[in-house]
Amino acid sequence: MVDPNVIRRRLQKLGEHLDILRKTQQYSRSEFVDDPCLYGSAERFLQLSIEAINDVASHVAVDENLGAAERAQDFPHIFESEGLIGEELRDQWADMIGFRNVLVHDYIDIDRTIVHDAIQNRLGEIERLRSVFARYL
Image 1 (cartoon, rainbow, N blue to C red):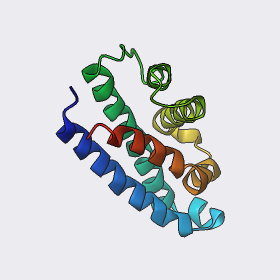
Image 2 (spheres, rainbow, N blue to C red; image 1 turned 30 degrees about the vertical axis):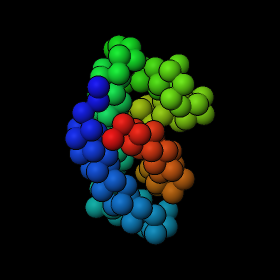
Image 3 (spheres, rainbow, N blue to C red; image 1 turned 120 degrees about the vertical axis):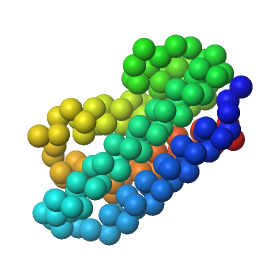
Image 4 (cartoon, rainbow, N blue to C red; image 1 turned 90 degrees about the vertical axis):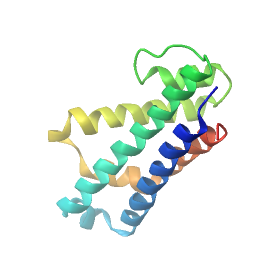
């Protein structure tokens, strides 16, 4: 059984990260890419948001015996195969995980306009996953 306190703490932190990211939506693309404090903060909070989703997924997968994940990319497929998310959200989540890997490992060549686009257009995907995991509270 999932420990609701573990899930609650992580989802609460995720909510804080999303609140910070929403504040950055007010900036134009040029303002965003020209301000290292702004884009650096946004990159980090995007990374932390995706990490929080994957961390919660790991707890739920283990506690609910959904199957073993050898890597984060397995989570979207596990949750989709269990009927907990649809194909579209599965694909969006897989994209997020790939994007997190870019933020962490390809940090030298990050296209800041892509980060800006993610903040402007893709936070809702993280919110949808947050709602999926809120069911375990």
